Length: 172
Image: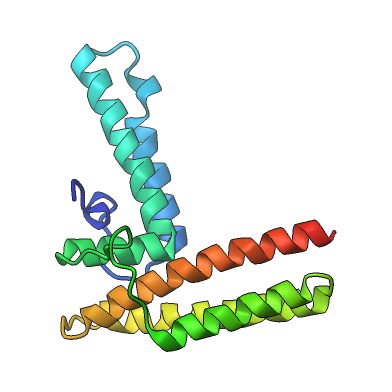
């Protein structure tokens, strides 16, 4: 990993962060490092401003998103989520996903069914994010495998949420 985004924004390396504070620190730093401020500077100053601005924007994007933030925290601890190569998942979680997908297919014409699924997925996501916060912010490194699993499960939930959003849009 090239950059510790928590250090970049001088924030504690925790899952639970104050998103308003993150945005304020981003605005403060981007004002200082915006490339337009260095338009008349040397080529080295312009290059550095572009690089720092890019880091700031990347850091904001990563830390603002819970899944990306958790993945970043795990990477800082030397743990990869291996989402490109590791396809194993908890059987119970996969069964739940299959049941939700069946409900979506059966209920696409019924907005109340899609709304109920949206609520279920949001509840599941919130529970997983709470567990992630507990695991990643406790300071213990004993159950980072479970944190890794939760990140991967949250990625599934994000994809399913997008599918639900599409179903809502198509129903309108």
